[in-house]
Length: 139
Image (cartoon, rainbow, N blue to C red; front, side, top):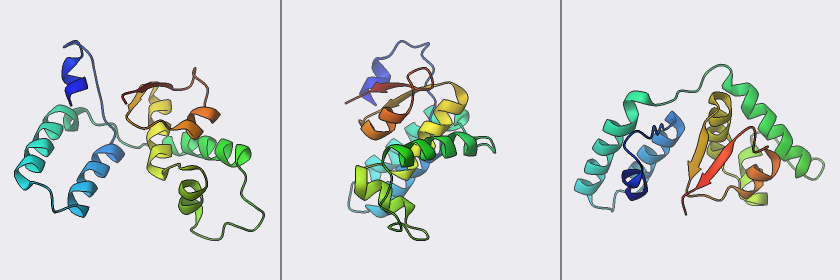
């Protein structure tokens, strides 16, 4: 959170519920880390982002679908290679796209927000216009 702390005080930063869920899942999946530090991090995250968290709306599905369609047109799977419930594995294994990233970018696109991330998201950035979503990479 050092990058966030270094921003001007009037900078509005919002997280979506998907990102907050990923943090929670990480804590549940990795119980070997320092519990006190995790609790402190969660408390700070909740204080800073939970009150203004961006939810997925019924309209988010259109942005998600558009983005998925663009990915599949640019990187089509071999005919018949994707069976039922294999889309997420195809995205990740073929070109390193996490399905939660697709949803998160769709949320940013829907709300006209700048998308700040530590991930490069190269494939997503290849199919979305800068006028649709502007990315700030915090690597």
